Length: 332
Figure 1 (cartoon, helix red, strand yellow):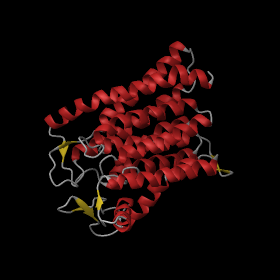
Figure 2: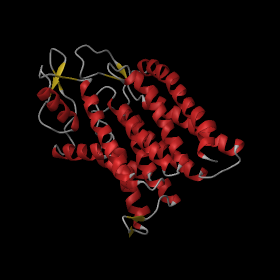
Figure 3: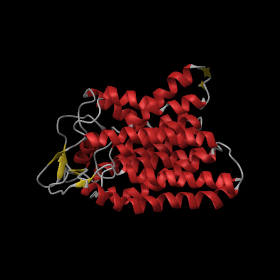
């Protein structure tokens, strides 16, 4: 199957289906979540009603249906089962990360799963890739042998899954970051010939885009860990399966910075800002995340010396775009 056939026959209908399924599913989930009282308060709003939680359910539904269509077209229309076992393994990674996210969302962000339990559970999300012997064990000229599937793959999946959850808490931030990072990885995997990874990551981008319409400021739904965990897991899995670990790590620079800033607060400090009476936001205690860096920069460069919630994701996204552009320049 050449690139033209892939783009013309498979890519567009699959990605469009993921987008439409999520676009339809999100309003339905908002109503159901409110009815079941699976809601939360928007802490950066002076007046906020109950906002539906765990919006990742609708996103994952759109992604999975899109991928199933891809598998069906490959198997019945093109008569090929190439990469089918890896596709199913990737879906298992996404499913398990989603299940862990559901438990976290049901328990609530204040209680949630303990860090140790969360890491322990997310380890199991890496098992499908470990069992498949995914990726290549040679990195930077060093052959890690069995250490790659037994140690490095679990570290990668647990690391990207949990860390992607750190940069959050502002309307549209998680969804827009997922769109940018996975959109870039979709281009990378296409350029490197891993077309099957390109279409799967594009399905997630399309679903996130549909979700973003409801999650952007002012949000009608929150993503929850039900979204951040599978998105982070997918980023790690694509890096491994596509053998593009180096550029994927580079794209992940904002999250690496976020991790170290969170580590300053022993992973206990929140990313939220302090809401003022005029709806502007300040830093509560100190710099414990890129969100706080964005607030400090906005207050310094703006004539009004005020920062607002919708500006924080915009500034972080601009930084992410800069990282992606530099990454393409360095690696291509």
